[in-house]
Length: 101
Image 1 (cartoon, rainbow, N blue to C red):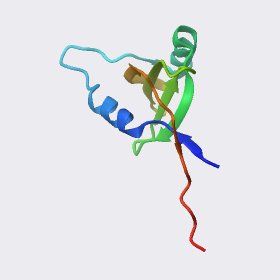
Image 2: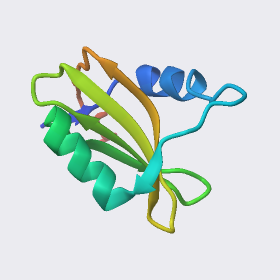
Image 3: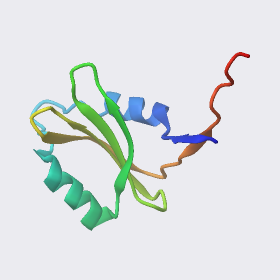
Image 4: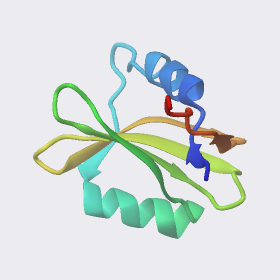
């Protein structure tokens, strides 16, 4: 059985490219509100989840047709911030490594 994973390279590049420039503000709000907005406006749902070293949850939300995606980080206090958004998300199938006999 294969597991599905998001395109990790896109996540890494997206995080590196989204540091706000001087004078720009980052979009942050309660996670429940952000998830609701992503579902209502873009029909995006959670597709991947990981926990960062600082305890924050890093999530990818994807539209079912792969048309749009959003990368967020939620801190332990429940505040989520947009890290990156984009189009043309592709979910890749990855075979599990074989276990030694």
